[in-house]
Length: 99
Image: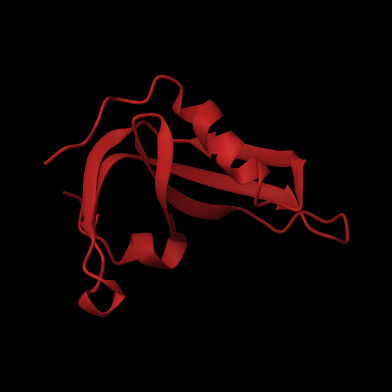
């Protein structure tokens, strides 16, 4: 399995990714876990693709359009060669078995 090289700065890589998806990225509060080698296979109906790299669990709380914090949301971000290749939401993480 090709996991790629370990992330050089996983926090900066994740923040850069979410800067493009959050409504107010400057308000974001992050809690990071440590990167771990990880792989996951998509469901057959979703193509059955295997994503392998280093997963970082991150909790994010940011403001919405009304200026209120929405509460912490958990994500699993898979990084390979310092690029985000897959983001899993909390409900997906709860159904995973750690490799």
